[in-house]
Image 1 (cartoon, rainbow, N blue to C red):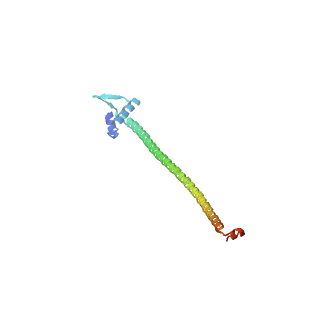
Image 2 (cartoon, rainbow, N blue to C red; image 1 turned 30 degrees about the vertical axis):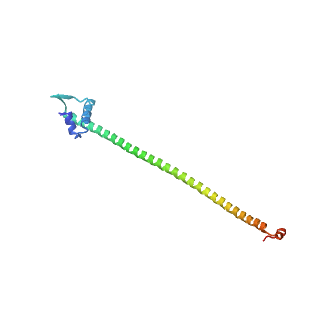
Image 3 (cartoon, one colour; image 1 turned 60 degrees about the vertical axis):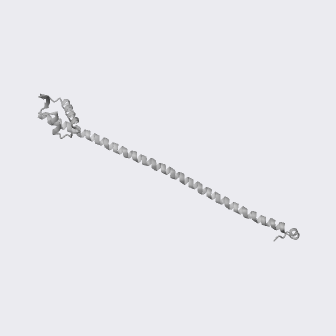
Length: 153
């Protein structure tokens, strides 16, 4: 004849889970309609029923710990998924920044090319203007004879 406490101790229950296991034992006694007798001020269970109770509580404990393990596993995987999602968002953001920088560099190169072309046109115009200025000066400084014959060289 064993008490609920003795059955829990036989199952080598940790002190943390002791109260839970005792409650599971009580619940199992009620579920299986096991007859209990009162010995002093404690209720006791027959030795034949003790094994049935232990097996049922242990199997439920294994199921419960398996469920807890699965939940923890799922939580761990969800956290990893969230980390990957955050990493992906960060990578995507950096990729957008890189694309913007590349577009900006392409615009700068195009504007630099246009500026160089404008600068070359300006230099060419300045050279032509300089040549024309020289011809005008030659004409103005030329003698009457050169002006009438139009031989300015």
